[in-house]
Length: 404
Image (cartoon, rainbow, N blue to C red; front, top):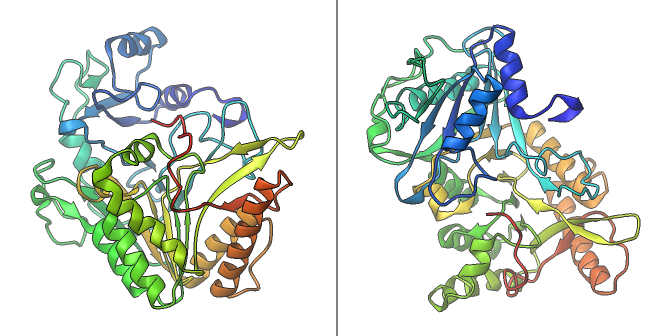
């Protein structure tokens, strides 16, 4: 963690020492590297015992290697000082990266979190309680921590947090059917049949793309959903500007999929987007003092539409995130906030301030600079900013990232 505070486990243990109630839901998926999650194996539990960790934890499992992929934090849940965080950041060295993404030995990941206060934070609190109380492994010997103490159920929030601003926020989710059964509503809300599952993220992505009239900006570690790509193509046909930021070295699953002939129609669909001058498939990279290029892994899950609406969360643009994996997003309806987010992202990626430009003017600048930087890379000349355009027809054929 930054500022010499040790690992995330040091931070959690220190909070317990201060008398706080600290609870963690870990996801457990067979076959996934321990580098990328904490499945509570025997050696990991022995390590927790050796360090004397006293925070409460439960493990949650999805069948068939599905991922409980939500990444949220709650501080002072239910109190006046309640704060929630929703996004995609993994707690690992390459993800806790300084702004600007200067090359580092441990690697560099671009990611985004959203800080929430007010009633929307209560929805994040409600989601955590729902998942904690019905975590699949809670009754197993290795399904909770500490082993000698019953971690206990939590009470659902009974009142909304006080409004702290005028930005409308909606929390959306992907939850498989039959995962959780307690439909206790949020304060002031209606009971929801969570046992039937929830797929509000997918619905909102499609609706937002179809509603776009000017611009769509997406950051994601994958461009892997045929439905989403098809709706993006329809948006391009009606004159919407589209930028899709991906890792220059693609996710290994995307790379492997390119070897599957049955998926050729999908990759042809992705390649067809390049026919539109208003489209850019782009990536980001930075250079060290010797002008060596270092790719920046894009792990953010962000979509902005018309400088008016945005969503930030854990959801990848792949079908499993809309149907299988447990996901959590927060969406914003507030033009000043959304425009400021777009300007901050463009300033980091392009190295220029676009606050005085409309969204279409800023997108035009992004297209030009990304395409120019693609040529600069070929000529081994220094890039201007971090963003460069990627050939959609070739994306995924080169060396993949180390991400699992």
